[in-house]
Length: 94
Image (tube, rainbow, N blue to C red; front, side):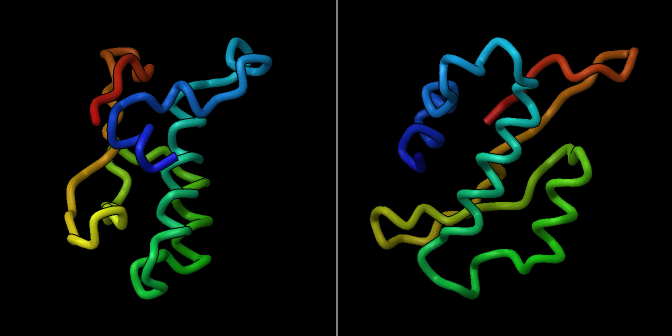
């Protein structure tokens, strides 16, 4: 999952049988929170209060994550949502 996320192939994580009926920004946020919760070092994982807040509120930027694959700590914003004039989410950047 982490590899697909960092390679900007997050759509491949979504089951094709539900892909058409889901709201992609929400699904991406759920995947992101899940990745934050399974970081290698426990002190890097969000506490439950923060998890509930991240799942309850649509954030413009959702925390940071570590890349645990190579042992080097890297911090970068990994999800950003953009809204148009009507307040609708139109695009995401990684």
